[in-house]
Every structure is written in structure tokens, then in C-alpha cells.
Length: 304
Image (cartoon, rainbow, N blue to C red):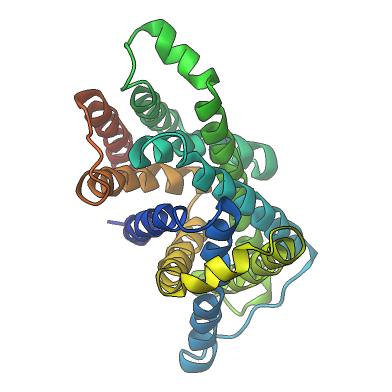
């Protein structure tokens, strides 16, 4: 199995842990605070990863350029918006279904990859993406009367709109991060996906922390004591969030963002497990079938 696949599965597991913890934090602080925790408490770990690669492993630091800064800023802003919408989405439906809406990200990432990078997906890849997206749509209507009408109209509901927009921003951020990371390669003696990913992560998460903290201080200062009071779970969110992001950045440096994000759909397996065993939320048969379609799309992609 290729390295990027293993990295992606590990990152998907860590991301599910982070999302579960953020759902918990949403109960003790606002959406903005729960979103900030993902970045602010992840910054020390992102800096640590970069330091270890540079000073302990002896890998040279890349030199950033204009292309890197452009894509890193776009990706950082898009991820803030995507994370905010995803956390907000948890207020509407259960944990598994809420997360599922944003999983249209691979299809949207494929579009952004084609527009901005000229990356074309094979016919088999497009079929795999389509199967996964159908699985997401089934999950979205699993708690309603199933019919062709509800399957289509579900996409236009308020909850679906928030989830789909979250997926759009996640897709844009994924392609942006790949572009930023690849822009660093020419400044290195040889391509180093770990250093490129770590450097990109360090810059982006610093940018996100500064932006979110400035917003909270200026507009939602009452969130600060709630964030401080929940520092222990926030610390866990920061660690697993930074570790997951490091994994995503490495995988997307090695492979097209859309392809990585299809394999990342295995997160839904971890999500359903969290939904059932941690949050005690019942999963019905149609949701399970939708999950199986998502996994089928991933397996097809890996075997292509």
C-alpha cells in the first residue's frame, strides 16, 4: 500500500477524534471558541513538528515565495470558514450526519484542482468520487421518507446548504495547501514532502491563530474565559488537530487533493463509531448503507 494512503487513514482517524472533541467543546463555548481551539491549541505542536524536522532530523528549511504565500493564505482562510460551518452544523443534526454533509469535499476538490492546477481525474476516479457522494446523500435523507424527491430536495435544505458550503471551503483549502506545499519544492536540494508539509502547516496555523484570536478579542471577548476554562480538552483538540493536519499536508503533497480526500472518507467509519459508542446516537440501516457506499468508493480508488 502506498505511503500516502496509510498517512491519509491515520489522519482521518485523528480528525475524527478532533471533531468529537470539538462537539464536546461546542457544549461549553460558542462556535467561534470551538473553532479557535482547533488552531490556537494546535500551533505549539505544529511548531514542534517543524523544529524536530529541522534541528533533530537535520532537514533544511525551504524558502517561501509569492506563490506559497498566496495559496497558504487562501487555504488558511478557507479552512477557518469550513471549520466554523462544520462546528455550527453540529447544532442541527447528530454527529455522524452533520459530518457527512461536508464529505462532498472530494468532488469539490476535484473541480478546484482542475480549475487551479489543471489536474484531471481519470474515469475510474470520477466513478469512485460519485459513489462516495451518493453515499453522503443517502445519509443525509436517512431519517426521512426516502424517495427520489427527498433525495434531491435534501441537498437544498438549510442543513445541507451549510454542510455543502463547508465542503466547498474544505475542498478549496485542500487544493490550496497542495499548491502551497508544492511551491516550496524548488527551494530545497531535493523534494521533501515531510518538510514541505510541516512548513506549510506551521505558517498556516500561525496565520489562522492570529486571525481567530484577533476576532475573538475584538468581537467575542466573552469567549476567552470559556476557552481558558476548557484548556484540558482544548489541549487534546490542538494535539490531534495539528497531527491530523500534518498528515493531510503530507498526503496532499504526495497525491492530488481530490484523491486524498476520497480515501479520507474512511473517517465516516470512525465517525459512526463515535456517534454510536460515545454520543449514544442511533444509526439506522440507510445510514449504514450510505457509509458502505462511501467505503466502496474509497476501495475502488485505492485499487485503481
